[in-house]
Amino acid sequence: MKNMLKLLVLFFTVFLVFPAVPAPGQTSGENPEEPEIITVSEDVRILRYYSARGTRSEARHHYLEIEGERIPDVFSKVVYKGLSFTFGSRKYHWGDDGYLRGSDAEVTGSPSPISAEQLERGWYEGGGILQGTPENWIYGEWKGGALLAAPEKLGWAVETLDLPVIPRDASGIGLILAPENTKPVVETRRNCR
Image 1 (tube, rainbow, N blue to C red):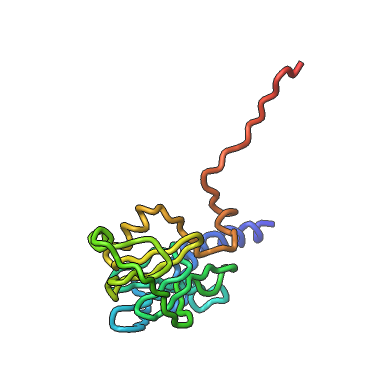
Image 2 (tube, rainbow, N blue to C red):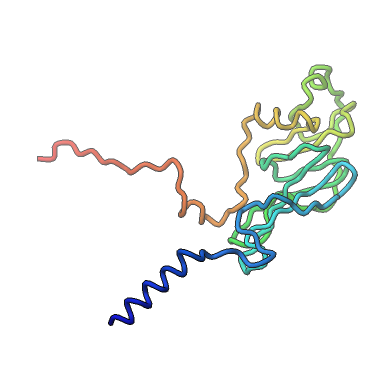
């Protein structure tokens, strides 16, 4: 019995003094400092971050950057100069999430001209490209709508329209581990006598 107690103390001491560290080439955080950069074109880059790299739970997180502007996680589809990207969520703890290359597509045109107000604002809602829209504007599509915006005005458009963020992890594990905005249900009973 004394030997068993000594072994337990030794066991816990080893784990307290030498905590688990990731293996070489493996990252411990969700997003390490340096992403892998995938250059799609002169103006388009995909920043790929890894979590749990080198393990069965390896996940790859893809962030789209156009003309130096990070595209928010609100669009199911993004088109820029004929290059198409679709947003994907992970269903498991491993796999890919974020913006990935899709089949290249052009956005349909509209015979209507863009207004001076829309040009000044730098974005407009709609599923087609209005005549006179600058060629570097980004097309973004979400459930229930679409917009075209200058890269530097896209963030403002998303904020103005209050577009919901698409979750990168759709497995539901985050809801189990870290529930947000949950309050216990309080039942009130009347005439309890």
